[in-house]
Amino acid sequence: MMREFQLLEHVYASNQSLSPNVQIPPGDDLAQILIGNPSLLAGVDQLVEGRHFNLEVTPLALIGRKAITRSLSDVAAMAGKPLASLIAITLPPDFGEDRATSLFDAMRATAEEFNCPLIGGDIAFHEDPSHAMVCAVTVLATPSRKKAITRDGAHVGDHVYVTGTLGGTLLPNGLGHHLTFTPRIAEALALQSQLGDALHAMIDISDGLGRDASHIATQSEVRIEFDVQAIPCRAGISWQDAVSGGEDYELCFTASGDVPSCVGDTLVTRMGVVVPMDDQASEGTPNVVFRDGDDLIPGDELGWQHES
Amino acid sequence: MMREFQLLEHVYASNQSLSPNVQIPPGDDLAQILIGNPSLLAGVDQLVEGRHFNLEVTPLALIGRKAITRSLSDVAAMAGKPLASLIAITLPPDFGEDRATSLFDAMRATAEEFNCPLIGGDIAFHEDPSHAMVCAVTVLATPSRKKAITRDGAHVGDHVYVTGTLGGTLLPNGLGHHLTFTPRIAEALALQSQLGDALHAMIDISDGLGRDASHIATQSEVRIEFDVQAIPCRAGISWQDAVSGGEDYELCFTASGDVPSCVGDTLVTRMGVVVPMDDQASEGTPNVVFRDGDDLIPGDELGWQHES
View 1 (cartoon, rainbow over the protein chains, first blue to last red):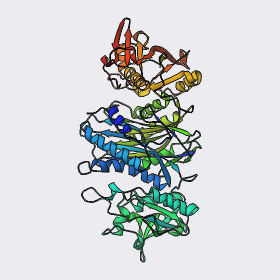
View 2 (view 1 turned 180 degrees about the vertical axis):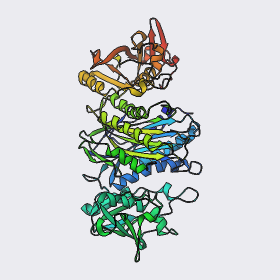
View 3 (view 1 turned 90 degrees about the vertical axis):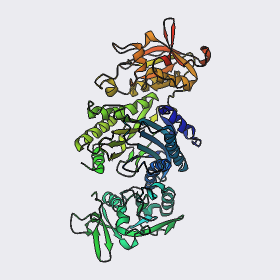
View 4 (view 1 turned 90 degrees about the horizontal axis):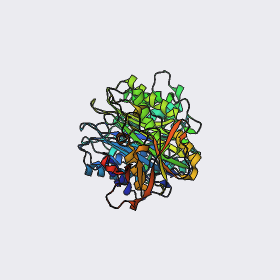
Protein backbone atom coordinates (compact mmCIF):
# COMPACT_ATOMS: atom_id res chain seq x y z
CA MET A 1 0.00 0.00 0.00
CA MET A 2 1.31 3.40 -0.99
CA ARG A 3 1.69 5.50 2.14
CA GLU A 4 -0.77 8.32 2.76
CA PHE A 5 1.87 11.01 2.31
CA GLN A 6 2.91 9.62 -1.06
CA LEU A 7 -0.69 9.32 -2.22
CA LEU A 8 -1.29 12.99 -1.50
CA GLU A 9 2.04 13.90 -3.16
CA HIS A 10 0.89 12.04 -6.24
CA VAL A 11 -2.42 13.87 -6.32
CA TYR A 12 -0.85 17.28 -5.82
CA ALA A 13 1.78 16.59 -8.50
CA SER A 14 -1.05 16.17 -10.99
CA ASN A 15 -2.37 19.60 -10.05
CA GLN A 16 -0.85 21.21 -13.11
CA SER A 17 -3.18 24.11 -13.45
CA LEU A 18 -3.01 25.66 -9.98
CA SER A 19 -3.64 29.31 -10.61
CA PRO A 20 -1.15 32.00 -9.59
CA ASN A 21 -3.45 32.98 -6.73
CA VAL A 22 -2.36 29.82 -4.86
CA GLN A 23 0.52 31.41 -2.98
CA ILE A 24 1.40 28.33 -0.90
CA PRO A 25 0.45 25.09 -2.66
CA PRO A 26 -0.59 21.89 -0.86
CA GLY A 27 2.26 20.23 1.01
CA ASP A 28 2.68 22.58 3.95
CA ASP A 29 0.47 22.68 7.04
CA LEU A 30 -2.10 24.77 5.18
CA ALA A 31 -2.39 26.18 1.68
CA GLN A 32 -2.57 29.94 1.10
CA ILE A 33 -4.80 31.57 -1.50
CA LEU A 34 -5.07 35.19 -2.56
CA ILE A 35 -8.71 36.21 -2.61
CA GLY A 36 -9.51 38.70 -5.36
CA ASN A 37 -12.78 39.50 -3.70
CA PRO A 38 -13.02 40.37 -0.02
CA SER A 39 -15.78 37.84 0.67
CA LEU A 40 -15.62 34.09 0.69
CA LEU A 41 -18.27 31.37 0.39
CA ALA A 42 -17.52 28.09 2.16
CA GLY A 43 -19.35 24.82 2.70
CA VAL A 44 -18.75 21.14 3.28
CA ASP A 45 -20.56 18.05 2.07
CA GLN A 46 -19.79 14.37 2.31
CA LEU A 47 -20.31 11.21 0.32
CA VAL A 48 -20.68 8.02 2.35
CA GLU A 49 -20.43 4.51 0.93
CA GLY A 50 -23.67 2.61 1.38
CA ARG A 51 -25.53 5.85 1.87
CA HIS A 52 -24.74 7.90 -1.25
CA PHE A 53 -23.26 5.29 -3.56
CA ASN A 54 -22.77 1.56 -3.88
CA LEU A 55 -19.04 0.85 -4.10
CA GLU A 56 -19.61 -2.49 -5.80
CA VAL A 57 -21.41 -1.15 -8.86
CA THR A 58 -20.14 2.42 -9.18
CA PRO A 59 -16.95 3.18 -11.12
CA LEU A 60 -14.42 5.00 -8.90
CA ALA A 61 -14.17 7.79 -11.46
CA LEU A 62 -17.88 8.53 -10.95
CA ILE A 63 -17.63 8.39 -7.15
CA GLY A 64 -14.77 10.88 -7.26
CA ARG A 65 -16.65 13.05 -9.71
CA LYS A 66 -19.81 13.09 -7.61
CA ALA A 67 -17.89 13.97 -4.42
CA ILE A 68 -16.81 17.19 -6.14
CA THR A 69 -19.88 18.04 -8.25
CA ARG A 70 -22.17 17.64 -5.25
CA SER A 71 -20.32 20.39 -3.40
CA LEU A 72 -20.11 22.52 -6.56
CA SER A 73 -23.89 22.33 -6.86
CA ASP A 74 -24.02 24.35 -3.62
CA VAL A 75 -21.76 26.96 -5.25
CA ALA A 76 -24.20 27.15 -8.18
CA ALA A 77 -27.12 27.53 -5.75
CA MET A 78 -25.58 30.77 -4.44
CA ALA A 79 -24.46 32.03 -7.88
CA GLY A 80 -20.88 31.72 -6.68
CA LYS A 81 -17.66 31.29 -8.62
CA PRO A 82 -15.57 28.25 -7.56
CA LEU A 83 -12.25 29.13 -5.92
CA ALA A 84 -10.68 26.01 -4.37
CA SER A 85 -11.51 22.65 -2.80
CA LEU A 86 -10.21 20.52 0.08
CA ILE A 87 -10.82 16.80 0.40
CA ALA A 88 -10.73 14.48 3.42
CA ILE A 89 -11.12 10.80 2.70
CA THR A 90 -11.15 7.68 4.84
CA LEU A 91 -10.67 4.33 3.11
CA PRO A 92 -10.78 0.69 4.16
CA PRO A 93 -7.21 -0.58 4.86
CA ASP A 94 -7.28 -3.01 1.92
CA PHE A 95 -8.54 -0.45 -0.62
CA GLY A 96 -5.46 -0.79 -2.83
CA GLU A 97 -3.06 1.74 -4.30
CA ASP A 98 -4.39 1.68 -7.86
CA ARG A 99 -7.96 2.23 -6.77
CA ALA A 100 -7.03 5.00 -4.31
CA THR A 101 -5.09 6.74 -7.08
CA SER A 102 -8.02 6.43 -9.52
CA LEU A 103 -10.36 7.92 -6.96
CA PHE A 104 -8.15 10.92 -6.14
CA ASP A 105 -7.33 11.53 -9.78
CA ALA A 106 -11.03 11.69 -10.57
CA MET A 107 -11.60 14.17 -7.74
CA ARG A 108 -8.66 16.35 -8.73
CA ALA A 109 -9.59 16.30 -12.42
CA THR A 110 -13.23 17.16 -11.70
CA ALA A 111 -12.21 19.98 -9.37
CA GLU A 112 -9.90 21.39 -12.08
CA GLU A 113 -12.61 21.03 -14.74
CA PHE A 114 -14.77 23.42 -12.72
CA ASN A 115 -11.92 25.84 -11.85
CA CYS A 116 -11.96 24.71 -8.24
CA PRO A 117 -8.41 23.36 -7.75
CA LEU A 118 -7.64 20.95 -4.93
CA ILE A 119 -5.58 22.91 -2.39
CA GLY A 120 -5.71 20.60 0.62
CA GLY A 121 -6.31 17.02 1.51
CA ASP A 122 -6.13 14.42 4.20
CA ILE A 123 -6.21 10.66 3.75
CA ALA A 124 -6.77 8.18 6.56
CA PHE A 125 -7.26 4.44 6.59
CA HIS A 126 -9.68 2.56 8.80
CA GLU A 127 -8.29 -0.12 11.09
CA ASP A 128 -11.16 -2.44 10.19
CA PRO A 129 -11.53 -3.66 6.55
CA SER A 130 -15.32 -3.76 6.87
CA HIS A 131 -15.57 0.00 7.52
CA ALA A 132 -17.11 2.28 4.90
CA MET A 133 -15.43 4.79 2.61
CA VAL A 134 -16.20 8.43 3.51
CA CYS A 135 -15.27 11.47 1.38
CA ALA A 136 -15.75 14.99 2.78
CA VAL A 137 -15.34 17.85 0.32
CA THR A 138 -15.01 21.47 1.41
CA VAL A 139 -15.58 24.00 -1.32
CA LEU A 140 -14.53 27.65 -1.29
CA ALA A 141 -16.00 30.17 -3.70
CA THR A 142 -16.50 33.89 -4.17
CA PRO A 143 -19.90 35.50 -4.60
CA SER A 144 -20.36 36.95 -8.07
CA ARG A 145 -22.00 40.02 -6.54
CA LYS A 146 -21.47 41.56 -3.11
CA LYS A 147 -23.77 39.06 -1.44
CA ALA A 148 -24.60 35.62 -2.75
CA ILE A 149 -28.16 34.52 -3.66
CA THR A 150 -29.66 32.97 -0.54
CA ARG A 151 -32.76 30.96 0.32
CA ASP A 152 -34.43 33.72 2.30
CA GLY A 153 -35.15 36.27 -0.43
CA ALA A 154 -38.40 34.96 -2.00
CA HIS A 155 -41.10 37.64 -2.35
CA VAL A 156 -44.85 37.08 -2.50
CA GLY A 157 -45.80 37.30 -6.18
CA ASP A 158 -42.53 35.81 -7.45
CA HIS A 159 -42.76 32.94 -9.84
CA VAL A 160 -40.85 29.76 -9.04
CA TYR A 161 -38.60 28.20 -11.68
CA VAL A 162 -36.46 25.13 -12.14
CA THR A 163 -33.64 24.33 -14.54
CA GLY A 164 -33.57 21.08 -16.54
CA THR A 165 -35.83 18.10 -15.83
CA LEU A 166 -36.60 16.30 -12.58
CA GLY A 167 -36.86 12.73 -11.34
CA GLY A 168 -35.45 9.33 -12.22
CA THR A 169 -31.91 10.25 -11.26
CA LEU A 170 -31.19 6.94 -9.51
CA LEU A 171 -31.51 3.91 -11.80
CA PRO A 172 -32.33 0.48 -10.33
CA ASN A 173 -28.68 -0.56 -10.90
CA GLY A 174 -27.39 2.33 -8.75
CA LEU A 175 -26.13 4.41 -11.68
CA GLY A 176 -27.83 7.40 -13.35
CA HIS A 177 -27.92 11.18 -13.48
CA HIS A 178 -27.04 11.47 -9.75
CA LEU A 179 -23.48 10.45 -10.67
CA THR A 180 -23.02 12.26 -13.98
CA PHE A 181 -24.78 15.63 -13.62
CA THR A 182 -23.08 18.92 -14.38
CA PRO A 183 -23.45 21.42 -11.54
CA ARG A 184 -25.41 24.43 -12.79
CA ILE A 185 -22.68 27.00 -12.14
CA ALA A 186 -22.75 28.57 -15.61
CA GLU A 187 -26.55 28.70 -15.57
CA ALA A 188 -26.61 30.37 -12.14
CA LEU A 189 -24.11 33.04 -13.18
CA ALA A 190 -26.03 33.66 -16.43
CA LEU A 191 -29.33 33.95 -14.54
CA GLN A 192 -27.85 36.35 -12.04
CA SER A 193 -26.34 38.41 -14.82
CA GLN A 194 -29.62 38.52 -16.81
CA LEU A 195 -32.05 38.95 -13.91
CA GLY A 196 -29.98 41.12 -11.57
CA ASP A 197 -31.98 42.16 -8.51
CA ALA A 198 -35.07 40.32 -9.81
CA LEU A 199 -33.43 36.98 -8.87
CA HIS A 200 -34.62 36.66 -5.28
CA ALA A 201 -33.92 33.20 -3.83
CA MET A 202 -32.21 30.04 -5.04
CA ILE A 203 -31.37 26.51 -3.89
CA ASP A 204 -30.05 23.37 -5.57
CA ILE A 205 -32.28 20.31 -5.55
CA SER A 206 -30.52 17.54 -3.65
CA ASP A 207 -33.28 16.27 -1.36
CA GLY A 208 -36.12 16.62 -3.89
CA LEU A 209 -37.98 19.67 -5.20
CA GLY A 210 -40.62 19.46 -2.46
CA ARG A 211 -38.22 19.45 0.45
CA ASP A 212 -35.75 21.92 -1.04
CA ALA A 213 -38.49 24.38 -2.03
CA SER A 214 -39.69 24.08 1.56
CA HIS A 215 -36.30 25.45 2.70
CA ILE A 216 -36.88 28.55 0.55
CA ALA A 217 -40.45 28.88 1.88
CA THR A 218 -39.38 28.49 5.52
CA GLN A 219 -36.44 30.87 5.33
CA SER A 220 -38.38 33.45 3.30
CA GLU A 221 -41.53 33.08 5.47
CA VAL A 222 -43.76 32.45 2.48
CA ARG A 223 -45.67 29.56 0.95
CA ILE A 224 -44.94 28.03 -2.46
CA GLU A 225 -47.68 26.63 -4.70
CA PHE A 226 -46.62 24.43 -7.60
CA ASP A 227 -48.72 23.58 -10.68
CA VAL A 228 -48.19 19.83 -11.16
CA GLN A 229 -48.87 20.14 -14.93
CA ALA A 230 -45.88 22.46 -15.27
CA ILE A 231 -43.28 20.31 -13.49
CA PRO A 232 -40.67 19.24 -16.08
CA CYS A 233 -40.51 15.49 -15.37
CA ARG A 234 -37.90 13.25 -16.96
CA ALA A 235 -39.53 10.85 -19.51
CA GLY A 236 -41.58 8.13 -17.84
CA ILE A 237 -41.49 9.72 -14.38
CA SER A 238 -44.67 10.81 -12.54
CA TRP A 239 -44.77 14.30 -11.02
CA GLN A 240 -45.03 12.73 -7.57
CA ASP A 241 -41.79 10.85 -8.10
CA ALA A 242 -40.13 13.84 -9.78
CA VAL A 243 -40.70 16.14 -6.78
CA SER A 244 -39.77 13.62 -4.09
CA GLY A 245 -36.89 11.64 -5.59
CA GLY A 246 -34.00 14.03 -5.01
CA GLU A 247 -30.44 14.14 -6.31
CA ASP A 248 -31.52 16.21 -9.32
CA TYR A 249 -28.88 18.90 -8.70
CA GLU A 250 -30.97 21.37 -10.68
CA LEU A 251 -31.58 24.93 -9.50
CA CYS A 252 -34.91 26.02 -8.03
CA PHE A 253 -35.27 29.80 -7.86
CA THR A 254 -37.82 32.55 -7.43
CA ALA A 255 -37.80 35.75 -9.44
CA SER A 256 -39.99 38.67 -10.41
CA GLY A 257 -40.38 39.99 -13.94
CA ASP A 258 -39.43 38.23 -17.16
CA VAL A 259 -37.32 35.10 -16.99
CA PRO A 260 -35.89 33.49 -20.14
CA SER A 261 -37.13 29.98 -21.03
CA CYS A 262 -33.58 28.73 -21.29
CA VAL A 263 -30.02 29.69 -20.29
CA GLY A 264 -27.49 28.36 -22.77
CA ASP A 265 -28.82 24.91 -23.67
CA THR A 266 -30.56 24.45 -20.34
CA LEU A 267 -34.34 24.63 -20.09
CA VAL A 268 -35.84 26.99 -17.50
CA THR A 269 -39.44 26.14 -16.52
CA ARG A 270 -41.92 28.27 -14.60
CA MET A 271 -43.89 25.91 -12.40
CA GLY A 272 -45.06 27.75 -9.31
CA VAL A 273 -45.83 30.95 -7.47
CA VAL A 274 -44.93 32.45 -4.10
CA VAL A 275 -47.99 33.21 -1.94
CA PRO A 276 -48.32 34.66 1.57
CA MET A 277 -48.01 32.39 4.59
CA ASP A 278 -51.49 33.30 5.78
CA ASP A 279 -53.17 32.42 2.48
CA GLN A 280 -53.82 28.99 3.91
CA ALA A 281 -56.14 28.76 6.85
CA SER A 282 -54.76 26.11 9.13
CA GLU A 283 -51.50 26.34 11.10
CA GLY A 284 -50.39 22.84 10.24
CA THR A 285 -50.55 23.23 6.46
CA PRO A 286 -47.10 22.71 4.97
CA ASN A 287 -45.48 25.65 3.22
CA VAL A 288 -45.20 23.80 -0.10
CA VAL A 289 -48.38 22.67 -1.86
CA PHE A 290 -49.08 21.11 -5.26
CA ARG A 291 -52.11 22.17 -7.34
CA ASP A 292 -53.55 19.50 -9.62
CA GLY A 293 -56.56 21.12 -11.30
CA ASP A 294 -58.91 21.88 -8.42
CA ASP A 295 -57.04 19.67 -5.95
CA LEU A 296 -54.46 21.14 -3.57
CA ILE A 297 -52.09 18.45 -2.31
CA PRO A 298 -50.03 19.26 0.80
CA GLY A 299 -46.34 18.64 0.25
CA ASP A 300 -46.04 16.48 3.32
CA GLU A 301 -48.30 13.83 1.77
CA LEU A 302 -45.62 13.10 -0.83
CA GLY A 303 -43.16 11.21 1.32
CA TRP A 304 -40.77 13.99 2.26
CA GLN A 305 -40.92 15.90 5.52
CA HIS A 306 -41.21 19.66 5.52
CA GLU A 307 -38.96 21.58 7.90
CA SER A 308 -41.17 24.51 8.89
CA MET B 1 -33.02 9.92 16.57
CA MET B 2 -32.98 13.66 15.93
CA ARG B 3 -32.82 14.26 12.19
CA GLU B 4 -29.60 15.55 10.67
CA PHE B 5 -31.10 18.89 9.78
CA GLN B 6 -32.29 19.46 13.34
CA LEU B 7 -28.94 18.45 14.79
CA LEU B 8 -27.16 21.04 12.66
CA GLU B 9 -29.82 23.64 13.53
CA HIS B 10 -29.17 22.94 17.19
CA VAL B 11 -25.44 23.36 16.75
CA TYR B 12 -25.76 26.58 14.79
CA ALA B 13 -28.24 28.00 17.27
CA SER B 14 -25.55 27.70 19.96
CA ASN B 15 -23.18 29.73 17.80
CA GLN B 16 -23.83 32.89 19.78
CA SER B 17 -20.61 34.67 19.08
CA LEU B 18 -20.50 34.60 15.29
CA SER B 19 -18.60 37.73 14.41
CA PRO B 20 -20.08 40.42 12.16
CA ASN B 21 -17.79 39.28 9.35
CA VAL B 22 -20.06 36.25 8.87
CA GLN B 23 -22.34 37.81 6.26
CA ILE B 24 -24.40 34.66 5.59
CA PRO B 25 -24.50 32.31 8.59
CA PRO B 26 -24.75 28.52 8.35
CA GLY B 27 -28.16 27.33 7.12
CA ASP B 28 -27.94 28.25 3.44
CA ASP B 29 -26.08 26.26 0.77
CA LEU B 30 -22.82 27.92 1.81
CA ALA B 31 -21.78 30.46 4.42
CA GLN B 32 -20.28 33.80 3.41
CA ILE B 33 -17.41 35.46 5.30
CA LEU B 34 -15.82 38.86 4.80
CA ILE B 35 -12.05 38.47 4.70
CA GLY B 36 -10.23 41.39 6.25
CA ASN B 37 -7.02 40.26 4.65
CA PRO B 38 -6.80 39.41 0.95
CA SER B 39 -5.15 36.03 1.58
CA LEU B 40 -6.58 32.90 3.09
CA LEU B 41 -5.05 29.82 4.69
CA ALA B 42 -7.02 26.59 4.37
CA GLY B 43 -6.48 22.98 5.37
CA VAL B 44 -8.37 19.84 6.30
CA ASP B 45 -7.65 17.12 8.81
CA GLN B 46 -9.68 14.18 10.05
CA LEU B 47 -10.15 12.16 13.18
CA VAL B 48 -11.05 8.50 12.69
CA GLU B 49 -12.42 6.22 15.40
CA GLY B 50 -10.07 3.31 16.04
CA ARG B 51 -7.24 5.19 14.39
CA HIS B 52 -7.03 8.47 16.30
CA PHE B 53 -9.12 7.74 19.38
CA ASN B 54 -10.86 4.92 21.17
CA LEU B 55 -14.58 5.70 21.35
CA GLU B 56 -15.08 3.39 24.33
CA VAL B 57 -12.70 5.16 26.70
CA THR B 58 -12.61 8.75 25.41
CA PRO B 59 -15.20 11.28 26.62
CA LEU B 60 -17.09 12.78 23.66
CA ALA B 61 -16.14 16.26 24.82
CA LEU B 62 -12.48 15.39 24.35
CA ILE B 63 -13.04 13.80 20.94
CA GLY B 64 -14.84 16.93 19.78
CA ARG B 65 -12.14 19.12 21.27
CA LYS B 66 -9.33 17.20 19.59
CA ALA B 67 -11.05 17.28 16.18
CA ILE B 68 -10.82 21.08 16.33
CA THR B 69 -7.50 21.61 18.14
CA ARG B 70 -5.71 19.24 15.75
CA SER B 71 -6.64 21.44 12.80
CA LEU B 72 -5.86 24.60 14.78
CA SER B 73 -2.37 23.26 15.43
CA ASP B 74 -1.80 23.59 11.67
CA VAL B 75 -2.88 27.23 11.89
CA ALA B 76 -0.31 27.75 14.66
CA ALA B 77 2.37 26.06 12.53
CA MET B 78 1.94 28.78 9.89
CA ALA B 79 1.61 31.64 12.40
CA GLY B 80 -1.94 32.14 11.16
CA LYS B 81 -4.96 33.70 12.85
CA PRO B 82 -8.04 31.42 12.97
CA LEU B 83 -10.97 32.63 10.86
CA ALA B 84 -13.61 29.91 10.62
CA SER B 85 -14.13 26.15 10.63
CA LEU B 86 -16.31 23.62 8.79
CA ILE B 87 -17.08 20.13 10.09
CA ALA B 88 -18.20 16.97 8.29
CA ILE B 89 -19.05 14.05 10.48
CA THR B 90 -20.28 10.53 9.82
CA LEU B 91 -21.76 8.59 12.72
CA PRO B 92 -23.00 5.04 13.29
CA PRO B 93 -26.82 4.91 12.88
CA ASP B 94 -27.36 4.05 16.56
CA PHE B 95 -25.12 6.82 17.91
CA GLY B 96 -27.94 8.51 19.82
CA GLU B 97 -29.21 12.07 19.93
CA ASP B 98 -27.70 13.04 23.28
CA ARG B 99 -24.26 11.82 22.34
CA ALA B 100 -24.35 13.45 18.91
CA THR B 101 -25.35 16.73 20.55
CA SER B 102 -22.53 16.46 23.12
CA LEU B 103 -20.01 15.85 20.37
CA PHE B 104 -21.10 18.80 18.23
CA ASP B 105 -21.38 21.10 21.23
CA ALA B 106 -17.78 20.27 22.15
CA MET B 107 -16.60 21.00 18.62
CA ARG B 108 -18.53 24.25 18.40
CA ALA B 109 -17.40 25.43 21.84
CA THR B 110 -13.76 24.59 21.12
CA ALA B 111 -13.90 26.36 17.75
CA GLU B 112 -15.36 29.44 19.46
CA GLU B 113 -12.75 29.31 22.24
CA PHE B 114 -10.06 29.77 19.59
CA ASN B 115 -11.95 32.42 17.58
CA CYS B 116 -12.58 29.98 14.77
CA PRO B 117 -16.39 29.86 14.60
CA LEU B 118 -18.17 26.95 12.97
CA ILE B 119 -19.62 28.26 9.69
CA GLY B 120 -20.52 25.04 7.93
CA GLY B 121 -21.26 21.43 8.64
CA ASP B 122 -22.56 18.21 7.25
CA ILE B 123 -23.77 15.20 9.19
CA ALA B 124 -24.33 11.76 7.72
CA PHE B 125 -25.18 8.42 9.26
CA HIS B 126 -23.74 5.09 8.22
CA GLU B 127 -26.16 2.37 7.13
CA ASP B 128 -24.21 -0.22 9.14
CA PRO B 129 -23.99 0.14 12.96
CA SER B 130 -20.49 -1.40 12.98
CA HIS B 131 -19.03 1.42 10.87
CA ALA B 132 -16.59 3.87 12.44
CA MET B 133 -17.11 7.52 13.36
CA VAL B 134 -15.20 9.94 11.11
CA CYS B 135 -14.84 13.71 11.73
CA ALA B 136 -13.27 15.92 9.04
CA VAL B 137 -12.47 19.49 10.08
CA THR B 138 -11.61 22.21 7.57
CA VAL B 139 -9.99 25.25 9.06
CA LEU B 140 -9.71 28.70 7.45
CA ALA B 141 -7.27 31.30 8.72
CA THR B 142 -5.47 34.45 7.66
CA PRO B 143 -1.69 34.81 7.65
CA SER B 144 -0.50 37.30 10.23
CA ARG B 145 1.97 38.69 7.70
CA LYS B 146 1.72 38.76 3.92
CA LYS B 147 2.88 35.17 3.62
CA ALA B 148 2.58 32.51 6.30
CA ILE B 149 5.59 30.74 7.85
CA THR B 150 6.21 27.61 5.76
CA ARG B 151 8.35 24.49 6.04
CA ASP B 152 10.71 25.41 3.23
CA GLY B 153 12.47 28.45 4.73
CA ALA B 154 15.18 26.87 6.94
CA HIS B 155 18.67 28.35 6.35
CA VAL B 156 22.01 26.62 7.01
CA GLY B 157 23.25 27.98 10.34
CA ASP B 158 19.77 28.40 11.83
CA HIS B 159 19.18 26.88 15.22
CA VAL B 160 16.22 24.54 15.67
CA TYR B 161 13.79 25.09 18.53
CA VAL B 162 10.76 23.45 20.04
CA THR B 163 8.01 24.74 22.32
CA GLY B 164 7.00 22.85 25.47
CA THR B 165 8.01 19.26 26.23
CA LEU B 166 7.85 16.13 24.08
CA GLY B 167 6.78 12.50 24.46
CA GLY B 168 4.34 10.51 26.55
CA THR B 169 1.27 12.12 25.00
CA LEU B 170 -0.69 8.86 24.72
CA LEU B 171 -1.27 7.14 28.05
CA PRO B 172 -1.82 3.36 28.20
CA ASN B 173 -5.52 3.97 28.87
CA GLY B 174 -5.89 5.98 25.63
CA LEU B 175 -6.13 9.36 27.35
CA GLY B 176 -3.38 11.98 27.77
CA HIS B 177 -1.97 15.18 26.33
CA HIS B 178 -2.98 14.22 22.75
CA LEU B 179 -6.60 14.95 23.75
CA THR B 180 -6.14 18.00 25.96
CA PHE B 181 -3.34 20.08 24.39
CA THR B 182 -3.73 23.77 23.60
CA PRO B 183 -2.75 24.58 20.01
CA ARG B 184 0.24 26.95 20.07
CA ILE B 185 -1.48 29.79 18.20
CA ALA B 186 -0.60 32.50 20.71
CA GLU B 187 3.00 31.29 20.92
CA ALA B 188 3.38 31.27 17.12
CA LEU B 189 2.03 34.80 16.79
CA ALA B 190 4.30 36.00 19.62
CA LEU B 191 7.35 34.33 18.05
CA GLN B 192 6.60 35.84 14.67
CA SER B 193 6.11 39.24 16.23
CA GLN B 194 9.37 39.03 18.24
CA LEU B 195 11.56 37.34 15.62
CA GLY B 196 10.21 38.93 12.44
CA ASP B 197 12.19 37.86 9.37
CA ALA B 198 14.54 35.77 11.56
CA LEU B 199 11.79 33.13 11.96
CA HIS B 200 12.49 30.97 8.92
CA ALA B 201 10.54 27.69 8.99
CA MET B 202 7.94 26.12 11.25
CA ILE B 203 5.83 22.96 11.59
CA ASP B 204 3.65 21.47 14.30
CA ILE B 205 4.66 18.10 15.71
CA SER B 206 1.92 15.61 14.99
CA ASP B 207 3.87 12.63 13.65
CA GLY B 208 6.86 12.98 16.03
CA LEU B 209 9.75 15.45 16.09
CA GLY B 210 11.92 13.24 13.89
CA ARG B 211 9.45 12.85 11.09
CA ASP B 212 8.12 16.40 11.22
CA ALA B 213 11.62 17.94 11.32
CA SER B 214 12.34 15.79 8.27
CA HIS B 215 9.56 17.65 6.41
CA ILE B 216 11.35 20.93 7.13
CA ALA B 217 14.70 19.44 6.06
CA THR B 218 13.28 17.98 2.83
CA GLN B 219 11.37 21.09 1.81
CA SER B 220 14.25 23.42 2.74
CA GLU B 221 16.89 21.13 1.14
CA VAL B 222 18.97 21.06 4.30
CA ARG B 223 19.88 18.58 7.03
CA ILE B 224 18.94 18.95 10.69
CA GLU B 225 21.19 17.75 13.52
CA PHE B 226 19.64 17.45 16.99
CA ASP B 227 21.56 17.28 20.28
CA VAL B 228 19.81 14.51 22.22
CA GLN B 229 20.84 16.07 25.55
CA ALA B 230 18.88 19.21 24.68
CA ILE B 231 15.57 17.56 23.75
CA PRO B 232 12.96 18.63 26.35
CA CYS B 233 11.46 15.26 27.25
CA ARG B 234 8.37 14.90 29.43
CA ALA B 235 9.24 13.38 32.84
CA GLY B 236 10.09 9.70 32.60
CA ILE B 237 10.29 9.63 28.77
CA SER B 238 13.51 8.70 26.92
CA TRP B 239 14.69 10.98 24.12
CA GLN B 240 14.13 8.15 21.64
CA ASP B 241 10.47 7.89 22.65
CA ALA B 242 10.10 11.67 22.81
CA VAL B 243 11.19 12.18 19.19
CA SER B 244 9.25 9.26 17.70
CA GLY B 245 5.99 9.22 19.67
CA GLY B 246 4.07 12.01 17.95
CA GLU B 247 0.85 13.86 18.81
CA ASP B 248 2.81 16.48 20.77
CA TYR B 249 1.23 19.41 18.90
CA GLU B 250 4.19 21.57 19.84
CA LEU B 251 5.93 23.88 17.35
CA CYS B 252 9.30 23.01 15.84
CA PHE B 253 10.92 26.01 14.14
CA THR B 254 14.24 27.26 12.80
CA ALA B 255 15.49 30.81 13.33
CA SER B 256 18.62 32.91 13.17
CA GLY B 257 19.76 35.35 15.89
CA ASP B 258 18.48 35.52 19.44
CA VAL B 259 15.40 33.55 20.41
CA PRO B 260 13.74 33.98 23.82
CA SER B 261 13.76 30.97 26.17
CA CYS B 262 10.02 31.25 26.63
CA VAL B 263 6.94 32.88 25.07
CA GLY B 264 4.33 33.66 27.67
CA ASP B 265 4.43 30.65 30.02
CA THR B 266 5.64 28.27 27.32
CA LEU B 267 9.22 27.01 27.30
CA VAL B 268 11.24 27.41 24.09
CA THR B 269 14.24 25.06 23.83
CA ARG B 270 17.16 25.21 21.40
CA MET B 271 18.00 21.63 20.52
CA GLY B 272 19.50 21.50 17.05
CA VAL B 273 21.18 23.16 14.12
CA VAL B 274 20.58 23.37 10.38
CA VAL B 275 23.55 22.06 8.33
CA PRO B 276 24.09 21.71 4.58
CA MET B 277 22.77 18.65 2.76
CA ASP B 278 26.25 17.68 1.56
CA ASP B 279 27.77 17.72 5.05
CA GLN B 280 27.06 14.01 5.19
CA ALA B 281 28.94 11.80 2.78
CA SER B 282 26.50 9.13 1.68
CA GLU B 283 23.41 9.65 -0.43
CA GLY B 284 21.21 7.45 1.72
CA THR B 285 21.82 9.29 5.00
CA PRO B 286 18.54 10.65 6.32
CA ASN B 287 18.17 14.40 6.56
CA VAL B 288 17.52 14.33 10.32
CA VAL B 289 20.25 12.99 12.64
CA PHE B 290 20.62 12.85 16.42
CA ARG B 291 23.98 13.56 18.08
CA ASP B 292 24.57 11.72 21.38
CA GLY B 293 28.10 12.74 22.47
CA ASP B 294 30.32 11.37 19.72
CA ASP B 295 27.62 9.15 18.23
CA LEU B 296 25.54 10.30 15.28
CA ILE B 297 22.29 8.33 15.07
CA PRO B 298 20.41 8.46 11.74
CA GLY B 299 16.79 9.46 12.21
CA ASP B 300 15.53 6.45 10.29
CA GLU B 301 16.83 4.07 12.96
CA LEU B 302 14.29 5.46 15.42
CA GLY B 303 11.18 3.83 14.06
CA TRP B 304 9.83 6.59 11.87
CA GLN B 305 10.39 6.83 8.15
CA HIS B 306 11.92 9.95 6.65
CA GLU B 307 10.28 11.36 3.54
CA SER B 308 13.28 12.67 1.61
